Image (cartoon, rainbow, N blue to C red; front, side, top):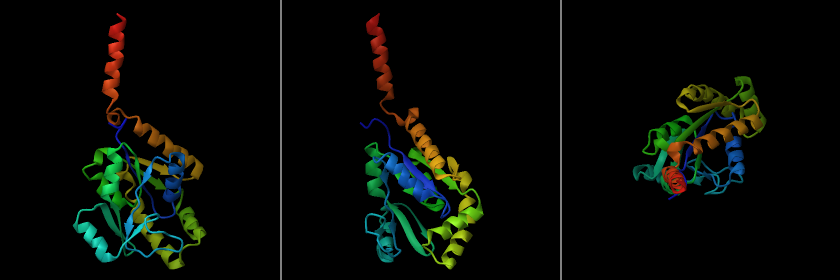
Length: 213
């Protein structure tokens, strides 16, 4: 039996608020945290490798995965489909490993409503201001002005779902936000309900008391 049940760590935010950076930092802090590599129908960007950043599929292949129930969640974003393959996630959980999801509110909502809802810890990342959010998107230099405008429009809808999450971080400073994220994960791991062997440990302590009398 694993020392504890694994966590499904959901990290969501509007594009540019910092969730992907925080996800990378969290895994650098604890390399044992598994990252759920999403499947997508969008084309690979330069430098992306199938199975590393994403599993790249055709629309027909993705529809087949949905029909087969092979995805834990899926959603359409900017005309492309994204989803989380179910098998690797459930295997990691059952082995007591934490699994990290860098997904939007739609995916987060589906996972929170799944059969493994009791293992979910959901965290939403807010930008300090909308002006700062636009500055970060522009500063990345990855997208055209039209795409940035679309992301800014979508961000209002994304932010409207903040109250559905267990925790909310305001990313004024990435180092502070990382420290807060670590604290959340540490506290959630220590919850009594996530430690299946705790009762046996307490019984062993009581046995030691009895043996001393």
